[in-house]
Image 1 (tube, helix red, strand yellow):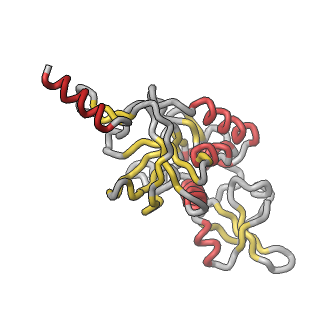
Image 2 (tube, one colour):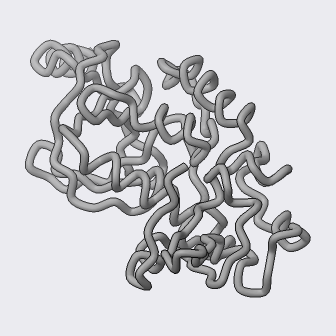
Image 3 (spheres, rainbow, N blue to C red):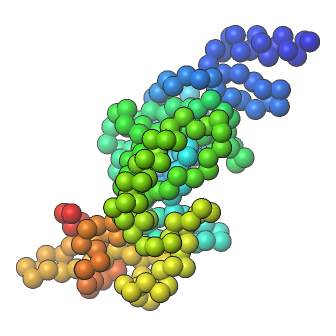
Length: 240
């Protein structure tokens, strides 16, 4: 009885949060967007932020991007592109986060949230650009699942990003092995370095990412693992 009264008092005092009998912090049904400060972009779906004076790791709700440095999977194709694009979006405006109605933390102690820049969903942008898949759907944290699935279908229909290579996206993650027999694969490109560096007739150095419209028809003079490497080598991104 005393424990119940204590939980009720805590819920009353803090309003937007409640503590379950298991001790797991949950959020209420609010869709409030909370301003936070970006500290670090870890990969395409994970960041570190300053939240209420503490550095917290946040895992994006309902999406999954290719791994950049997994112990078993290594570096997967398009992982660097997803991280680069995530970083580019996050540094373009005001960063806010939104919690769903379920558990706030995952099994690794990371916060679970929806991410916004100037009120626009970062998850939805990554899905629509073909740099992520819908994944880790654990009710009741499904507030924007329908919107995310629609965004993902746009990329899948256009066959961009992770959808460009058949069978790369699976229900369990991303299957890097499909690139071994890809017609555009080379020893340098398999499983990691997928950015094509091309020098056109005017001598201008241009690089093409796998999600670009002219990627398949581009014959590379050089391969790059990240856009940063291409830029350092004097290449500019293709306008597509």
